[in-house]
Image (cartoon, rainbow, N blue to C red; front, top):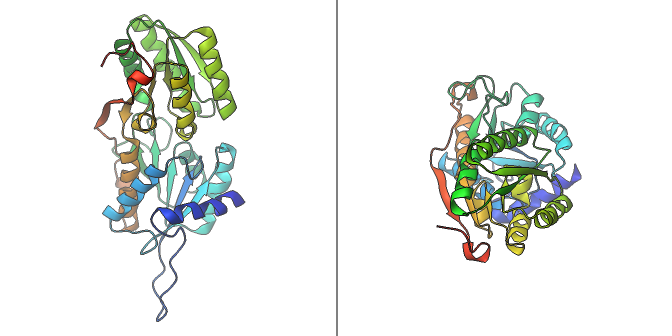
Length: 318
């Protein structure tokens, strides 16, 4: 667990101290509220997302280091550590917990009292995080950004925009159980409906990503669809580089992939989802109860986002 303490220094250069601001020299100041952040990845994975989260906090009236402190807990892709890290935040007595991806379940298991704001790609009610989107109940609320629910649409777009494809590789992370199950289920159903063949590949390490791309090339798949996963977001540079290197037309779950060279993506803005988490967390610090705060679903789906098509695929139609 020493890694998260060391890595907290990373955020000092990104807009504020990661620990509480010293008390004023004259007079005791009121205790600064502390927000705990629980993330299954490492701190350099999605810097722009946390920049957006702090922007959301500012919109709600909170500035890190000035009137709110943030304690970060990173699992470094070791998801079995999430319960330990969640319990540590509870012992710390934070005012609220922001939980991303699979960490939301660990946070929920750790406390029924501390408010939790989550961001997930699956239906939060289906995951057991809330009673319903409109009336979450309990101590959780947050953002559902549809990454998993758009699998069928991504497959249809891939078929339309890359003429002549027949065999599609679907890449999922077996460690993201619920996301993997829904992605495979939806991809199989959509592929059957539009006459495509799919083959599912799994990867949960950087080495396994290299191995599955070697298999893509060896088995001559026409294109690639990647499923939602915090780990894939963390490895998006590797994924987009290998797709470009091997000239494999690929569609991804969000803009964060096309921003680093991916061919195309379709999905709600993950960055905006993080900003909204910050807004929600700010409102909770002001006294709003999660039970009465409807979970937010971004309705501005990223349209189609393009990277540099000609660098990857000369067959794509825009």
